[in-house]
Length: 269
Image 1 (tube, rainbow, N blue to C red):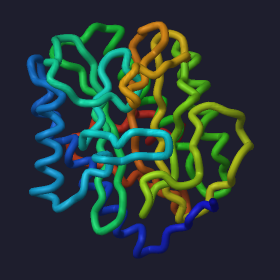
Image 2: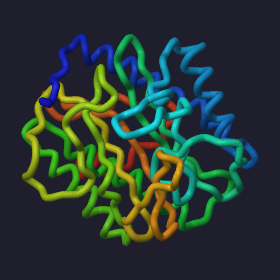
Image 3: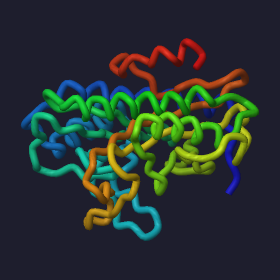
């Protein structure tokens, strides 16, 4: 499969889908607190997507080859869960960290983003992991420009994370996105600079590093979807959908409630 280059009309439609996905995270932010269940977060997100935004929740019944249909409208991955955690009736506890991953479909176009939340009062180590994973994502984003290569993104993320004593999950990666949930290219969060595909204006893909406090090895938890760290160390993930522009990049999944962009982004680092 080849990488699709989006037209101006395509990009305009994706801006809408991506903005709506980010808006769902802003809505959820007020509800992530001790005692709430991830099923309740799923219900709130589903109702907002369907009844307010007129969107389709892309994860619901999504079934790539070899998988059972995903049973919920969002993914909620808690503490040592790396990704694809399935919402359930277990209440969140003070000190938990949770990733909420949202993908909307609006007028046939996908918007994909995720955010970490610290439940109540998190530990210094948990808050550090969440912040450094956010920074790692942005270290990758700032490498996006025409003529750069996908390997430049992965290298920037890997180098930053490993210099902080963290590890990068390698089995899952970012991806092209558009009319399909997952398109080419694969966007690795590790690698060598100057390798892999050359970035061109009109490419749209996600950057979504999964960073572990411990070792990088992972395993499947037994429900067919949820991925966890083998050593049960904490794991964090952030995700933005990014457009390659004529001069650099545009982050499509921005919203008023998202955390501040790191200072090094505007400093040109």
